[in-house]
Image 1 (cartoon, rainbow, N blue to C red):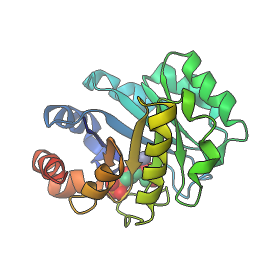
Image 2: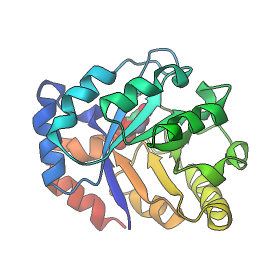
Image 3: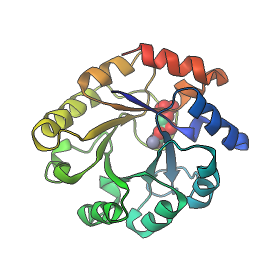
Image 4: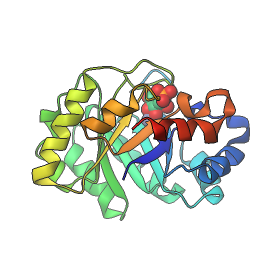
Length: 216
Ligand code: DX5
Ligand code: ZN
C-alpha cells in the first residue's frame, strides 16, 4: 500500500487550515510538515506553535520532517504540538541513536532522513528499530527542485536491508516527485511519497493527487 504525504511547504500559508481540510478530503494519507531552521538548510519555515494550531483540522497523521541542527532539543515540543512521525536528519545529529530512541520513548514513530550525498551504509545498524527511513531525492531546503536520479539506487539499498532486518520499515521519498518520477521510486521500493509542488500545482489538489496515483 503506497501512502501519499503532501508537503504543506507548497501550500497557501495564508489559509493553511482550509488547505489541510482539502488535502484530507482529496485522499492524502498523511500531512508532511517541513521544519527548517536556516542553519541545517538555507531556509526558515515553521515550528511547534503552527503545527499545534493546524492539528484540529484533521485526524491524518502529521509526518514532521525536521531539517534542524541538533533536533533532540525540540522533540518534546513537536510531540506536544501533535506530531505522529518525527524524522531527524542523520547529518544534523552526532547522537542519532539517542535521539531516535528518545522520539520512540514518547510513543511516536521515529525516522531518519539521509541527504542525497549520505550513504545508506551509515544507517544499516539502526534500521532494525526504525519506523521509517526518508531518502531525500533532492537536497533539502526548498520545494520545486529537480529529482536526483541516483536516489533510486539508495531506495533499493534500503529496501534490501529492510527485507531481512525490518520488513515493516516504511521507506519515504521527498523531493521532485511528480507523475514522471513516482513510478521509478515506487518500483525501487518507496512506499511513502512526499510531494509538494506537484500536488499544489494550479491549486488542483484533487486532480493532482489522482494523477500522482495513476503514475505507479
Ligand atoms: C524539501 C522538503 C520537501 C519539499 C518537497 O527540503 O523536504 O518536503 O516540500 O517539495 P517538492 O515536492 O516540490 O520537491
Ligand atoms: Zn520534507
